[in-house]
Length: 76
Image 1 (tube, helix red, strand yellow):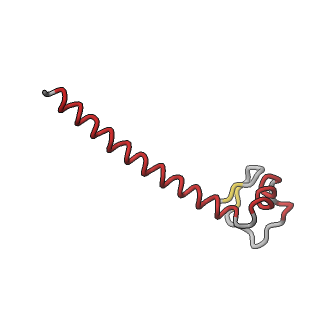
Image 2 (image 1 turned 120 degrees about the horizontal axis):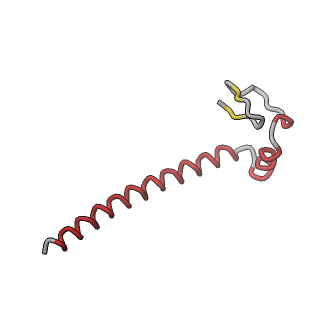
Image 3 (image 1 turned 180 degrees about the vertical axis):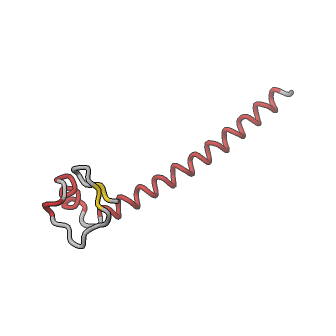
């Protein structure tokens, strides 16, 4: 569902969206970045999420390695 500025949700997008139906912030973004702004922002968000997931995996791996090394050092 699409969130409307006044809090109402649409069940589906209309075929035509009039500029007067958009918030001023949306109009400003479209003027600044063009009609592809939503796609570009979504692609950026997905890439950022993927990078964060990868960093969490690396962090978990390094934490396990650190604990393993500490255990080896303590058993000496």
